[in-house]
Amino acid sequence: MAKIPQQLVEEVRERINIIDVVSPYVQLKKQGRNLFGKCPFHEERTPSFSVNEEKQIFHCFSCGRGGNAFSFLMEIENMSFPQAVAKLAPQAGVAIDDSYLNNQTNVQVDSETKALRDLYAEATRLYHHLLVNTDSGEQALAYLTARGLDESTIDAFMLGYAPEGNILYEYFQTQKIDYQLLRKSELFVEWSDGSLHDRFTERVLFTIRDSSGHPIAFSGRKLTSDDDVPKYVNSPESPLFNKSSELFNLDLAKDTIKKQKTVILFEGFMDVIAAFQSGIANGVASMGTSLTIEQVQQLSRLADKISITYDSDMAGQKATKRALDLIAQHSRLSAQVIHIPDNQDPDEYLRSNDADAFKQVLTHNIEDPVTFNLRYLQIDRNLNNQTEFFTYISDALAVIATVEEPVIRERFLRQVANEFDLSYEALQDQIRPLLLQRQARQPSKHQHDQQQKEISSSSQVYTSNVTVKRNVSRIEKAEQILFAWMLHDNDVWLQVTNYVGFSFQDVSYETLFMIAMAYREEYQQEPINDMAAFMDYVQKPELTRILASLAEIDPQLFTDREQVLAYINVINNEAPLEEKIRQLSRNIKEANRLQDHGRVAQLSVAYLAALKEKQNKNTKH
Image 1 (spheres, rainbow, N blue to C red):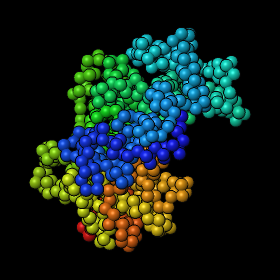
Image 2: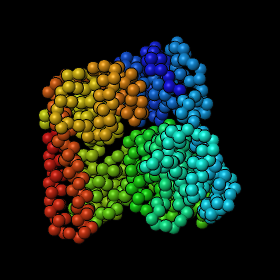
Image 3: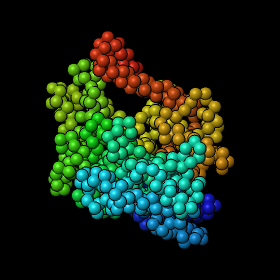
Image 4: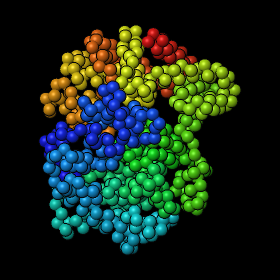
């Protein structure tokens, strides 16, 4: 989409009132300095969606969404940033060309992007032709047919074949395509002499498309059994392809996802394709098992529920754990895990069973996140070792404490008690402090404008009940308040930035800090008081949500300058202790694996001492 000039963006933002943007979607009522209503992004009985007219931002205390008028429209209507600006321009009385209001399929793009898209479209057509219509593609076509794919599926996904040689480069040479454009496309490998050569040779090609259906990358699977050749070769990132924000098959799946409000996350391309052929049209895959925040946010705008169907091997289980954590922290999606029988992956299961059997698996072989985590926590742990056993129980209780419904929480507690022959009452006693801490971190729904302060350290580090995520650690509370203070008080900004060795521990706050430095320099904003404008500069949804939550912090927390050093001390001193505990736990596991009992005993003493140090700090606070 063509970029709207920054001057026009600022003019629209200054003239628009966020209340007028939100009101058609949310019934708002004035409560104190803010307006409240039921969040349009998730189901809720008690209004937790707040709009601050003075600062022109919104924030939901339940799901964590937040931003300005543009980001609200982007979330609610699944728009891009330019589309949101163009949509609001007439309401603001600002004249912007109608082309900015085009649908995503008709967006204007710069000439280079269009040329690159044309290259990939041509490459896709050529590779597909070589697969289905030439003798050189017979082996690749036989491979795909043996994997159970029919002709219509191969065509729908525009699968292809790259033969030996430089057939793609030679094809573009006949069309006199500019050399520099070919270099930028990443379809070729550049040798030291400057010559270009086909990146993909002797491979079946999976075409990766963006959400609008444009081919933007390829993943090539080898057909040989040569172990010296990598199984897959993937397109590197390019002007068209950012692997952290793309999802395989989203272009074909998004309409079904929107309609069913549910998405299935598979591990591999073949899993998605096989499921699609069997009638499961709402499946996608990330670029590898490393799901990203951007991908989670993208799915969250389309669906309410996500089913994770990764492989059952250790890599797949670790990826499932990471995905569940990412989804819980950065979305409102309700998650579940699906287990394929007999340790098969979905593609294998579909080759030996029919579509109906697979659909039964998707609806019956389900595990909720708590059950998965309780099982996952036992992996690679020697529960016959007293130290590891008690660490497991402690970790398991921390997971169970996240369950809001008392009846369900009780069921999990009894499950652990029965499995390990423990006293249910003892487990209740041990989990009670965790529940109290969690309750203290969550604001009351009816008291958004009367947030109470709590003293959280012996040096009187004040925090607010406002949370960025449901479970906010003591360290993040300090980072939350300190960063908000830095933004609107230049003296605090200078004090923190001149403190030798300081850095934010949470990557989101460190990222925001770096962006704020660039923003201050570019716009000469010292301090940053226009949060809505800063959100436009940041744009990433997961970061603008954090900025929105900062606006709710009690301003009285920014009056005592002595607290700045106290926050710095919490961030610098307590975070390393947490990391020390995690590292000792990892070392104990490794020593147990090597049956080094002397080292286990030595490490256990250090581990228990670190836990005691943490406990002492917490009781002082």
